[in-house]
Image (cartoon, rainbow, N blue to C red):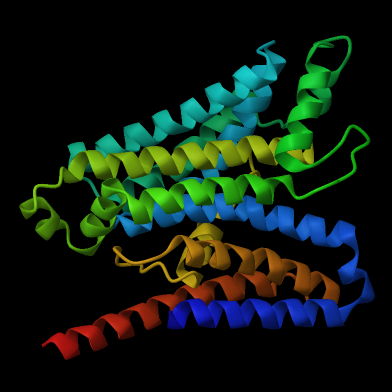
Length: 329
């Protein structure tokens, strides 16, 4: 509760600073854009949090986002209908997670090492698919190429990212998508046996084994969920910006997702965290980006803030763990 109160106070303070910094900060277009960014990063934070809760970590999230965006656009260029391309892209992400999960728990490798390798491999695959070039929706919506795709893509852009046919951002669709998924995962984590098993595995894997929990399948499932959400976020990225570059799409998003989870009270040691905390933590970095822009502060300070946040999050988590151990001892 102390962590939740802390991040809530931080958010209120940052919102107040944003609204006082510039009168344009209260414009509906700015608020919708901010909410949309928070929804997008919420998906990635949720992906990272599920991994961390169960005692693992995934450093390939950003590269899977980039690969997802490239694959989604490339499939549509090949003539695959947009909705089918989206489903295939998410399935690809889930398959990536399955492979990484099996490498970790089938061959007893470290998740850090496997996903670090994946970070480079998936980025390289994205470059290989496009020859180093980007993909754009204008290539797919060209009436001389796939004229039947235009309406489908416009519908997807409206309901998934809130952009209409006139390229106007009308409502925070990505925030709505995130809230829906957060509600589902909230029920899964806090109200079902499967969620309790994930917490138990993250808190003490050996004790979970003695309790009869099949640790391997549950851990592999977190990889599938994480990469599936990341590939879906890649589709949203392409729909939102209209184009994606294999070198930059999703870059550093794994660190931002982990930071959001830590800010939301998810313990880096596993076994602790709530869906409410995850949602609050995910809102901080997009708000920080917006605040930096309106205050005219150099954007170079953002990586510094991310790094310090991760450090202090780890420090506080270790402090709380040792204090709890001292009380029980």
